[in-house]
Length: 148
Image (cartoon, rainbow, N blue to C red; front, side):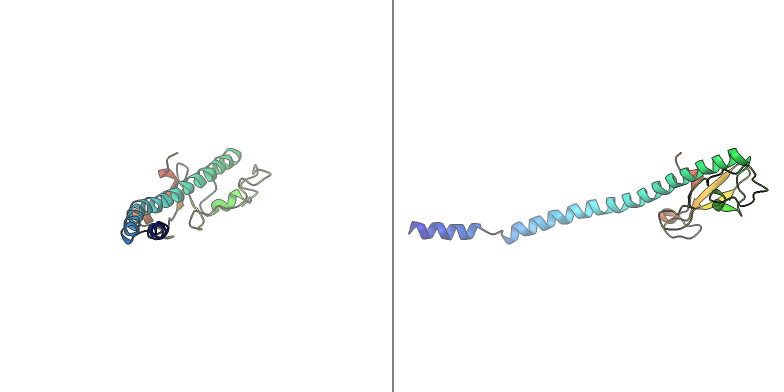
């Protein structure tokens, strides 16, 4: 009889109880409630940081353009002026190679905007809403506001 009793005890101990499963599900739910919002927020911050980094590369190319040509390209010429000389008469000292290979897009797939100002330039990404303006998470990202 001892043999059958041991077998019966083994069968009982093989599975998890409903209470144990509920405790595990509760713990996983609590972890998800705390971790998921942080992961989502980190993704948005990473995209914004990437845009600032891309703008930094474009700003370096614009500075090289200015060193060669004595001025930044006009707003109308835009960042395309870094890819191809827009006016050989206006920019006779334009580099033999383009300053950048192509006009970069921001983290949301939109072209980075360029504006020539009196004191230099600004680069702008319209952010996740892809529209000019916005506030909070949808606010535009200006290179002048990026941590340099």
